[in-house]
Amino acid sequence: MNKHRIIALLLAACFGAGAQAQALSSAPTAKPQAKNIIFFLGDGMGPTTITAARIFKAGEDGLLNFERLDRTARIKTYSNDAQVTDSAPSMGAYMTGVKINNDVISMKDAKPVAPAKDANGNASIDRCGANNGSSPMTILELAKANGKSVGAVTTTELTHATPASTFAHVCDRDMGYTIAQQVVPGGAGYNPRLGDGVDVLMGGGKIHFTPFDAKRNPKGRGDGRDLVAELGARGYFVANTRADMQSARVGRKFVGIYADSHLDYASKRRPEQPTLAEMTAKSIELLSTNPKGFFLMVEGGKIDHALHDTNARNALVETVAFDEAIQTAVDRMRAIDPGLENTLIVVTADHDHTMVLNGYPKRGNPVLDIVRGYATGEPTRDADGKTFTTLVFGNGPNRPEVRADVDSATALSEDYHQETGVRWSSESHGGGDVKLYATGAGSAPFKGTIENTRVFDLMKAAFGL
Image (cartoon, rainbow, N blue to C red; front, side):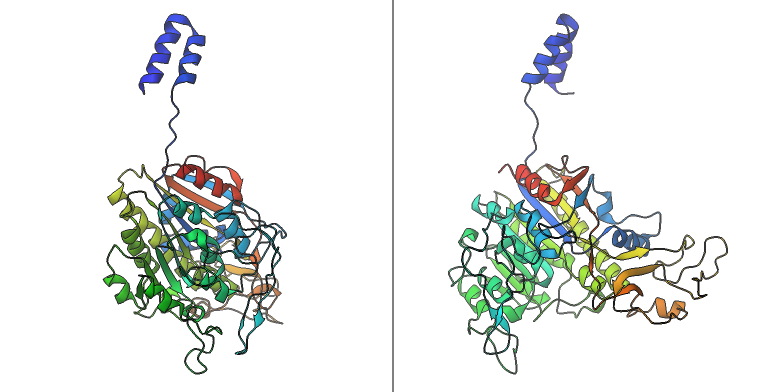
């Protein structure tokens, strides 16, 4: 019990409750402020994906690491113009505190305008135009303006919707070439709010940073700029491989671009690509030397890719890899800041998907398998007498005209694509709420059902900004 509480109780005993209330009201309120924030975003990691990944990793009675964090909340995900959001406005809401239109990167009231094709046939010509929305400050930009180090890490392209929403402002998420130049200090199109530059950048998407070459880089930049070389000239340590990354030392800005497009699935990762946990650990090593603290965003972006592909196995493997990255961050930060008294860690998702867990399978049945009933252990059959899997999708391309039996060997194979209800070219996002988990300094207000924009406000308050 603190001394102000003790004094208040003594006053109450001697002079009544009024004196107690006055003493308590004059006592200082403890408002922990975070020097560091690590924001983890599991792209598309809706509640069913979390449940299925938990069963996949640890069984029905187990937990993922991030499910052990102290605080939980439920997040509403709708965008400014849609019941079902895409990744750009949902991440933008977290980063800016503003509801944003679908397909727009961290801009208020902007309307998406797809880029035009350049002479090489790539959509690289920015057509946003003037007076198409405004650009609110992102939490990364605010952190940078207050002397903190900042970083963005992803398993997707660095110019993809989630990482881009931390450091760029464009009217259409498909403007990868424009997004890339916004992060290169001193170059044309640079975002000046980033000051001397984002301190750590890791992911894929080299095509948006390097010049067009008909044979070697057919998706490269039409303007001929080599942004990787420009970053190097600005003092960045440039990494192309896991070994490069591991050799980097503190004291320099860092950019690691490990693939032409997105990074590999964790299940098929080439050894030259670092894991998300390794990228997270290295980022913390590089950023944590700043006495003023840091902001780091880490995205598990391939969860979303697997779900769009109706490949539940890869979605669960990616979620487990994301979970390992979170535990790595918790362990590293506890070594630096044992009670997390100066560090806030937030874990959430930008949107749901249409995957559901169904059919009354018995406890212990592999979550990727066909349904076996809890009463008999025998395969459950649909109204047409056919077996089906525990995990299915509401929509997507894999809807047969006539269903056939699904056997365990097929359902459990690495490249199996679950069946869908509505036939669509690609499985869509879901509009349901997502979960949020938090721990550390400033985490107490993360509770209840809240708007995604509120997360920005709470992180900003935790930073004391």
